[in-house]
Length: 373
Image (cartoon, rainbow, N blue to C red):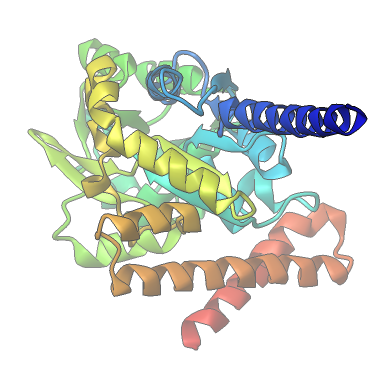
């Protein structure tokens, strides 16, 4: 009788252990694979709209519980990703400056970084340059000596304007640089004939307002046949590409970008890439121009390396080539050189007052050395 009771007790204990273990595993499997806020631009940006459409679909699927964390300022938003405060970001071209150690990321507490691209979207995003007809400029090359806006804190706009000047074979020392506190103020300045040219986007209401304004203008010609001019521009802003549509002859780049860092787990990024790709049709029902996230639109010879988890998915569906891998390896090697160069530069204890200027010189030397290898 006692032996029978002991046997029953052992069986019961074993059963309870199995049930307890099964319960733990069930809870673990029910836990979302990706349960995290995803950074995006402010609620009025295309980045936020894309992030919302993607998250709405992901959250209908098992293993996903994502929220959107809108941050209007692109610099702090990108820094939140780099610092580990957030794991993913639907970001903009500020991320390129973060990778390169440029503008706000040329500070001693920042520097170049190991960002990784998961996917990017191609849409009807277009940039151009409006030149006032009363400025007597007939083309970009006539901007020498003209009044050009520099917008305080607007890294992407200023980089675009700098690139446009490079296209014309000019630099800021050859134009009249007028500083404005914001883009809206610069637009008012253009309307009031204070400046002669301004960067514009075909996708914003401000362009329509400019067209309806009292100051006639023409759009600068960035025709892709101007090989030397494009080479000059891409030496400064390699992320830009020519785009033409109707009377518009401007530039474009992927936007938005889904980014993470090199430390993110391959499995997580693989599943995120796969899930977005396989549910893109549903996402485009919410947001039609989200079709730009399609795998056929991914540029494997762009300026930011892909995360290895995304590469795993691209290999799986047969669109990742040896050429893509060679380009990827070169981008990662370049990132590592810049990161090391920044550490070497800081070790020299540079003067804080001239840190950014001296870092840019040191950075150029390292990149020139890389180009000669």
